[in-house]
Image 1 (tube, rainbow, N blue to C red):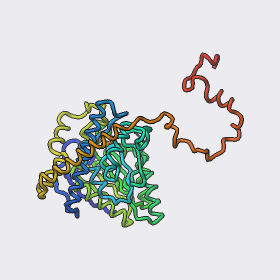
Image 2: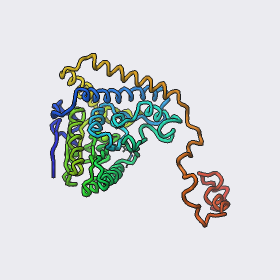
Image 3: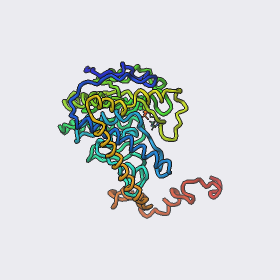
Image 4: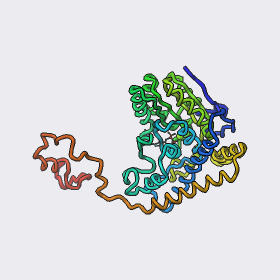
Length: 386
Ligand SMILES: Cc1ncc(C[n+]2csc(CCOP(=O)(O)OP(=O)(O)O)c2C)c(N)n1
Ligand SMILES: [Mg+2]
């Protein structure tokens, strides 16, 4: 079994990730041009600023539904997605706004989606970043944790069967690794030697449950041993280390050497969603991560030490601010969905199947037994004895 890894942060792994930030270990040397290094900064800054704009809109009650932040996890989302080629496919989670932006999702789409506008990607029928576009290589996410692992096993098995040299990447949280779907999916993909990268974002919490309360594994890469697959572990708050570890896994998958479990050690600085006040987090923990291990602050220090000027960085910040302002104006101008639009794309039109024969001419029976008066409630009084 291949078992390699950038064990940055002293291999602290699953059980200790929330206790203390990993030390700022320099990442492996990787081949990235200056332009690419600045792009990584752009994507992280865009992710954070877009979420900050969403917080403002949420407080103005313009966001419909919950708001899930990736504050402090921008390097893990951006660095891992950046390791993919354009034709590769990823399956994001709620904290992977950065990954979706890298894959081509646009700020205006994200803002419209969160505000449930009529011309948003799901036309107001889904929330936050639950939408996909196979042309751009990101699959629409679903809420059941771990369930996208078997889906991505299938997607990547189809790549392999068609001899299509594409790679798939699926994100799971630390909590999601405790589901049956995760186990079945990763095991199947391992046995089939699918070109799949499974990224475990170890951010210390699954909702209010700290990692030590939902697994006894010392670190998530240990789980790879049981599946007979390769593992990589990296400091998820170091964008270059994250990129490098994921890139090794992507290269391995493309070579035909199967699945890699990549553990990215990071920290969720906000609650599960905006409504969560994080009362269960030990005092000082969040402040410490913000002070000592903010992925953007760390990367800025690195870029400056490599000779990037303040002017160059300010130009990126200005570009991000301009793009988000323009996208917000556009999104705010869009209208709400038409009520009848809720039916579009739900039923086949015309129906692909003829109605069931035993229902032909039986509309009255169906109405009586399946759509009684007061649809959705049980009106016992009107029905007498039953
Ligand atoms: C199978 C399943 N169980 C429970 C939930 C409810 N739920 C949604 S997110 C979440 C916590 C997820 O934690 P983790 O996997 O660590 O991801 P994170 O939010 O930290 O990124 C829970 C329990 C769900 N969506 N699916
Ligand atoms: Mg988690």
